[in-house]
Image (cartoon, rainbow, N blue to C red; front, side, top):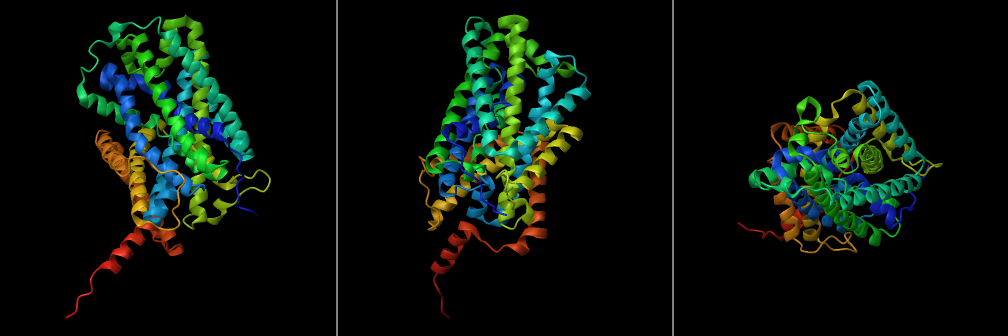
Length: 454
C-alpha cells in the first residue's frame, strides 16, 4: 500500500484550516474568563498572547518550507534535536490538540442550550455524534475536509465581522473605565490563559505534505491567518467588553461563575433574541470547525512518528481508496470520543495549554539549532525575519507565560514529558539511531577541540 498523500490543499484552504484551528473556544468562551483576570485590559491580553505566538509561527513557516512533510511540530523538533525530543513533542502536541478539539465539541453544549432545552446527557450525545462525523469526514479525504473547512470558516468570519460592525452603535464607553486596574500581572495571567486561542495557527504545518506549492502557500497561509486572527480577536473582544455589563459577564455562568456564552450575551444587547440565535449557530459552526481542524492536524503526528519508527508501523499506512492516513485518524478519533464521553475536558484543556506554550518555545529553539548546524539538508525557501532575536523573544515570552499558569498545568505538562520519555525508552530508542541537527553541532565541536599531548 502506498504511503503518499495527495497535494490538494490550495492557499485559501490552507488559510482557513489554520484559522479554523483558532476560531473556537478562544473567541466564543474565553473572553469572560479572561475579563475576570485582567478586567477590560483582557483586550491587551489577546494582543500579548498573539505576539508571543508570532515567533513560533515565523519559525514554523521557515521550517515547513524546508520540510514540507506531515508531522509539523514533531518533525521539526525531531530533526533539530533528535528522536527523544521529537517523541516528547509529538506525543504532547498530539494529546494537547485532541484535548482542545474535545473541549471545543463539549463547549457546544453552552450554545446548544441557547437554542433548545437539552439535558446534559443529550448535549454530550450531540458532541459525540459530531465527533464521529468529523472522523468520517477526515477519513473520506483531506480535500473534502478542506472544502468543508473553507465554507465554515468563511461563514464564521463574515458573521464575526458583522458582529463587530454592528456593535459600534451599542458599545458603552463607560464599560472601559478602570481599563488597567488589575495591572500588568492581570494582563500577563490572562494572556497565558487565552494563549490557546492562537495555538492552532501553526497546525497547518502538520498537513504540509498535502498542500499545493508548499514553498509559497505554507508561510503565506500561516502569516495571513495569524494576522487576520489577531485583528479579529482584538475587535471582537473589545465588542464583548463594550456591549456587556461586566458584573453579568462575571457571574452569569455555571455556579455563578463567568459566562460561557459572552458572544451571545453581547448579541442579545444588539438584536435581542434573534441575535442570540444567530450567534449560537455561528458558535456551533466555529467550534465544529475547530474540532475538524484539530483532528485533521493531530492525526498527522502519529503518522509522522510511525514513519520514523517511533510508533507502530501500521499508523503510517495511507488508504488506497481515500488517500488519507486511516489508522492514524481512527486512533485520534478514538481518543477524541473517549475524552468527550468520560473526561472533564475543560481541566484537560488547561493542562494541554501549558504544554502548548512549552512546545511553541521549543520550536523557536529548533530553528536556532537548524541555522547554527548549517546542515546541507536544511534548505528553506522562506527565512524568518529578525533571526535570532525574534526566536529568543519567543522563548523568553513563552516561559514567562508558563509561570503564570499555576501549579497544576505545569505538573500536567511535566507528566506529558515523562510519558514521552518513557515511550521513547521503551519503544523508540531501539528502533532509531538518529541524532538530529544538534548532534551535528556537537560532533563538529568535538572535532574542533584541540588535541593535547602529554
